[in-house]
Length: 365
Ligand code: GDP
Image (cartoon, rainbow, N blue to C red):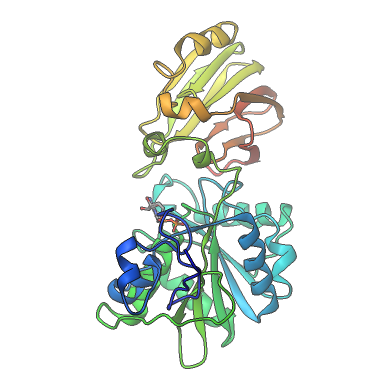
C-alpha cells in the first residue's frame, strides 16, 4: 500500500493491526477524507480510543514533548505503579512540569487514607527519578477526583499545551473522555487537526483558541503483568469493584499462591497475619512451603488458576526474591495486588513472573 496519511492526526494509515496506531478498516479507504479509526471516533462520537506504539515511535514521541513547552500529565494505574511507569520520561520531558494522576481509586478499600497513597506515589516517582509538580488520585470511570485534577491542570499548565501520556490499559482514554465530555458537553463534536510532519498520532483536543490537550498513543511496558497473560485472565485479575481484604494467619513454612501467577513464602518469623488485597475473583491457596513446588507442577492452570492454557504458553517462569521485613509493610505484586505483612521480624520470599516487579512500600492501611 502506498503511504496514506490520516487527515486527522497525520499518522500513516494501516488496515491490519486493529489496536495499532493508524488503523482504519479497509472500507474507510474509499472515503474522500481518510482518517484513522481513532480520529474518526473522536470526530463523530467525541471519544478517544487507545492505540499502542512501537519503541521507536515512542522515543520520537517523547522527544517531541521535550521540544515543546507544555504540561505533561502522566496517568498511572495505582494497582500497577511499576508496570505503568514510562521508562525514560524524565530524561525527555526536559524542563516541562509533570503531574502524576493515579487512576482507579474506586478499587481501593475505603479504609485507605488517600493522602498515604499520594505520598507513596510521590515517593515512588522520586525513586524512579521523576520529579512531579503535583499528584492526584482519581477514578476516571466513576468521576472521582476529576474536578480537582481539571482545576489542577488549568492552574499548572499556565496557558500552555497539555500532553496526556500513559502506558496501555491505565485508563488514559477513559480519563481524556471524561475531560472531553465535561468541558465540551455531549453535542459539540471536536474536530481533529492535522499536524504536519509529526506522524506520531497525537490527537489534538482544543482547550481554547491557542492551546490544546494532546492524547498520545499508549506505551507498551514490558513490565506489565497484562503483557504476559491472556485477555480472559486479565479479566480475572483486574478488580471490578472495591477490593475486600482477605486475612491469613500463617506460621513460618507456609506459602500462599495467588492463582498461579504469584506466590509468597513465609520463611521465618512468629505466627502473624498476612492481609491480602487482590481482585475478589482471584483464588488464594494456602499450602506448606515444602509442598509448594509440587503443587505448582501438578496443578498449575487448574487448581492454581489463572494462568489458563493460553497464558501458560507465554508466561515466564516465577522468579523468587527474598525480603526481610522490619515493620508493617506492603509487598506489592505489580499489576496484581499486594500483601500487608503486619509485623516486623519476618523473612519472606515473593515469586512473580520474570520481568514483572515485586516491591516494598510502607503499609497503606
Ligand atoms: P487506556 O488503554 O489507558 O486508554 O485504558 P482504557 O481507558 O481503555 O481503560 C483500560 C481499562 O481500565 C478498561 O477496562 C476501563 O474500563 C478500566 N478503567 C479505566 N478507568 C478506570 C477507573 O477509574 N476505575 C476502574 N475500576 N476501572 C477503570
